[in-house]
Amino acid sequence: MADHKKIILTGDRPTGKLHIGHYAGSLKRRVELQNSGEFDQIFIMIADAQALTDNADNPAKIRDSIMEVALDYLSIGIDPAVSTIFVQSHVSELTELSFYYMNLVTVSRLQRNPTVKSEIQMRNFETSIPVGFFTYPISQAADITAFKATTVPVGEDQAPMLEQTREIVHKFNSVYGETLVEPHILLPENEACLRLPGTDGKAKMSKSLGNCIYLSDPEEDVQKKVMSMYTDPDHIRVQDPGKLEGNTVFTYLDAFSNDGHFAEYLPEYANLDELKDHYRRGGLGDVKVKKFLNRVMQEELSPIRQKRAAYEKDIAGVYEILKKGSLAAKQTAADTLSEVKHAMKIDYFDAPDFLSEQRKRFQS
Ligand code: TRP
Image (cartoon, rainbow, N blue to C red; front, side, top):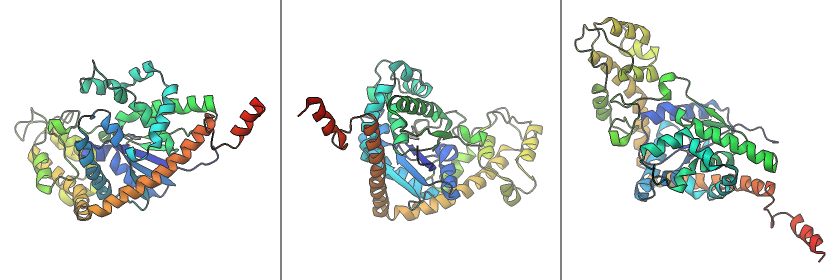
């Protein structure tokens, strides 16, 4: 490929408001990458078409979540002047690309995709898997390759999607000639951010379990959720030694706290290691640790909350951002689709040689 641009594409399914797990796993990093100035282009996609693959009967939920997710993006600091925010279904080229990529993927390969496998289980799809859902890894490959993305910052659960995409890229390029760009996954560096548990200690954070802290939660809600977080169930009295493994409060501190927080809010400890040591030894109560975590979380979330409030007063402005972004994304995807069709030799009416070639065949 001629161009060596550094391009980011990533996105989220709009099935509700985004929560702190999304934030730790990917959103925070996106803003850092955006502000690093190292990328030539950044595309952030609201994956409504993908959300419909397992929510076909609930389009109203997806419709309302478009704006929620857009507000979440803007309030964490995604800057529409730098990053293109767009809506997947508005870029019909993605559907077209998916259709061609489907020829390059086998059913058994999709069946082996670990993320698809576990999602099928979670949704009780075992006996009747919607075809659209089953093939969404292919559509995700279209999302990524349409923008020639080199870098895809996502959570750990998306690793199989990236692998699938890279396979499609290899296959396409080897069958039709060098056209598509191979993307790389960018995972969180912080171990605790890879898979942040719910506030109840369960591995999966989900709306239906009621164990999420949302980016849009008011201060009191965050405080309530932090103060009732799951800790070590055997740590009953303050003087008891406490366990850190599976202790949600400490996992969140691993993900969000830094030495500056200690200096400011808990100066009797220099850092998280000292706090952990004390907890393990005994003599440190959960309430004290939770109060500290609450300060840390509020510091992280209050600027986001403020920004959100400002954007909520200008929904028409957010609407324009999405509309403009979607149009720009469509143009980029259309360019890639043209290249794909050319490589696949189905660009009959755009290529000047099709007519002459066929006339020669028929000698007309
Ligand atoms: N599958 C992603 C999720 O569930 C959303 C998504 C769709 C995506 N297309 C993408 C992420 C392309 C990164 C790149 O959150």
